[in-house]
Image 1 (tube, protein in one colour):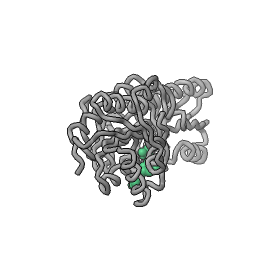
Image 2 (cartoon, helix red, strand yellow; image 1 turned 30 degrees about the horizontal axis):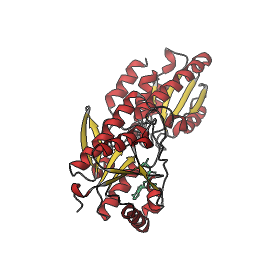
Image 3 (cartoon, helix red, strand yellow; image 1 turned 135 degrees about the vertical axis):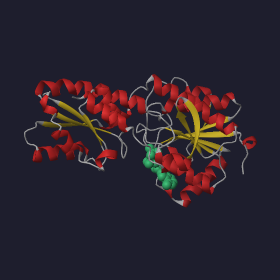
Image 4 (tube, rainbow, N blue to C red; image 1 turned 60 degrees about the vertical axis):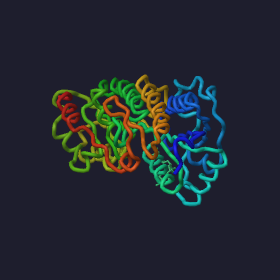
Length: 329
Ligand code: ADP
């Protein structure tokens, strides 16, 4: 087993879906590693760059002037080769070739699944940082990028509200979130929306029928409903189709926010979270930790085993749904 003493050079990569704050995380990992006497190598395009040997020396200046930029200076990609044993073998050869003794990977569920698989086959300490706008990783209250995405959603919905109110329309606004309704639910609260249609609830009950039966029209002329993109909810298009067929009295419109939600300058919350987590990743390696994700639990840094971070579904707070209902009378 590689020990902490053996670590001289740390590789850092961003992988999967990009999230605002990834640059702040790269900066924190790089600077904290250099502060602690490690060498740093930047790996471009996530696991793809590891397989294709797109690896460069990183000095402190490589991460100058990036904390306020969205996206990732290391680029990101999806890499099917890394899902194969041959691909991972090639990746390991490149790590050795570049003298990399430990890895910090920044990404979502898929990135951490890849890290777990890689670490089970090769002797390389890996620490993960939760970088995803979805906030769907277990063991951390917040993921890097989530707060910025929520603020972007709020900015967009505030504008849609003006036209929805003027035309007295029902608007379904689709937000990202795959199988998780965090963006839709908390976005709905932040925007004062009438409802959030999220996979965690839609799986059990017909949220659309409930919304209509609750008669949101009794007290207001227009309505904003945030919908998670998941196939469980039917997405905004699917729901609008249903309204046109089942409730033709409503004038329904759809807006899909799409990739707008991924971009933009990270909020203060995301920059702070990314900075704390990036520094914590290096602390974890110094302590001899491996195969863990850095999480935040009530503002405290915690270490979450990969298996836990990716396997368990993070529960939504159902009280928030109740609050949303109460406030949308
Ligand atoms: P995210 O990290 O945002 O969830 P993806 O799900 O696209 O993004 O995963 C990013 C990359 O992680 C994939 O392109 C693949 O290279 C790698 N990966 C995902 N799951 C696995 C796995 N089970 N084994 C090996 N690599 C994986």
